Amino acid sequence: AAGVIQSPRHLIKEKRETATLKCYPIPRHDTVYWYQQGPGQDPQFLISFYEKMQSDKGSIPDRFSAQQFSDYHSELNMSSLELGDSALYFCASSFSPSENNEQFFGPGTRLTVL
Amino acid sequence: DQQVKQNSPSLSVQEGRISILNCDYTNSMFDYFLWYKKYPAEGPTFLISISSIKDKNEDGRFTVFLNKSAKHLSLHIVPSQPGDSAVYFCAASEKSSGDKLTFGTGTRLAVRP
Image (tube, rainbow over all chains, first blue to last red; front, side, top):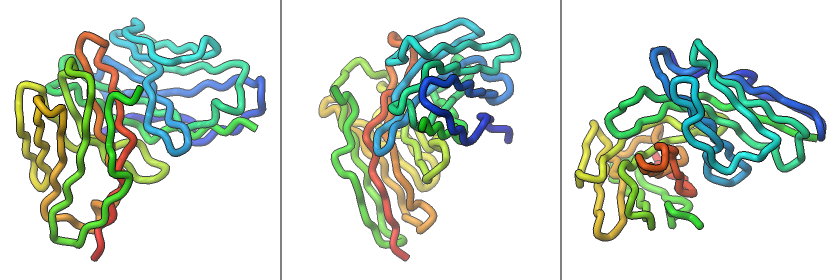
């Protein structure tokens, strides 16, 4: 079965550079979530989209922005990168309504800021 | 403020025996609870979920129990297999807060052959 696709899988950037992470949800899923997992930490919610509209926002810095496009893929744009932005970034998708809010995760993008 | 807690950072179990992973939460408004399994360098894999209106859900070797009065849930894996060795995350969500998942800190399960 098709899963959530994220690209790139690994990304190395310098401080103050920009980065764009892409997420392709499972076909027919209409909701996309972005999570950030720092070293040794649990995943933290950043932002979500339902039917191309932002549906919820978590602890996402103002330097980050995201959107969901007409084909339901989503992009997370990160500017003025800081060392502390180094983390695993996961995208998850779901179909609304789902039985128990099951969200299916992609493999993640590992961002390293030097 | 850690709303979802997994107090055991690690657990070691013999193959064939039962693994019990525990999770506590503080937010009584959570509607759904989910368990995810995670290998290094991979995304979390969904295992099993339960609604707050139920107290048990079973899927093959995996059973989740929910005790709302104690704000506690547990994942039972029977029988445990070496391939079950991974980090297990408990997560919860609240419909009125946009369904975002709040994760616990994870428990590393090691199943010994």
